[in-house]
Image 1 (cartoon, rainbow, N blue to C red):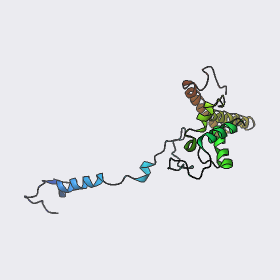
Image 2: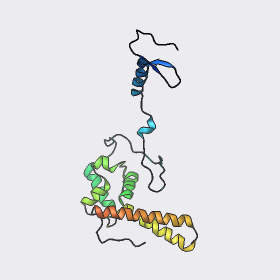
Image 3: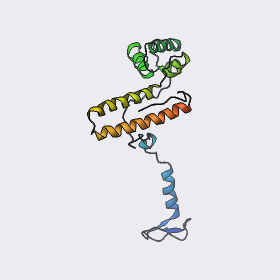
Image 4: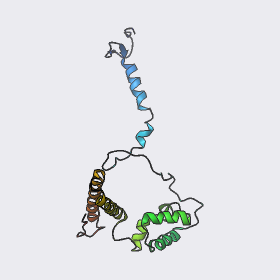
Length: 189
């Protein structure tokens, strides 16, 4: 910890603790930080949940590979016909994906057909009148109301009903803006 020599290319700098360091040393430290690898967790950032602000990381992950696996027996047209066949049975797009995965060995509709089940159903005019996610929220709201008829003092359920109705209003606004629901459609809680 001596004083920098007079013939050094960079003038000395005094740090907060009074230690004398050369600027060359400080610049080399700054440059070494540029080449450090970013933390892995920074690459996997998730959006927060709507009402709890928590960032859950649980759930299944799709494979990174974009091409369809070689072992799949079906071609794109055959998968589209299978989607139409199962949709005519009254299944939702997510249920169609599960049926094709479990019964027909189709791991991912989009990788094989080039479009998802909803797009295929839209082309063939098989989409339900109310979108699947909105219908699930409405069913949840009805279930909570039924529960509250017997347990009127369940304040957790009352809060859950308020949050669910809020999500319904928000998604209805989006679907009306995107013309996926008629403008005069309304939900009465």
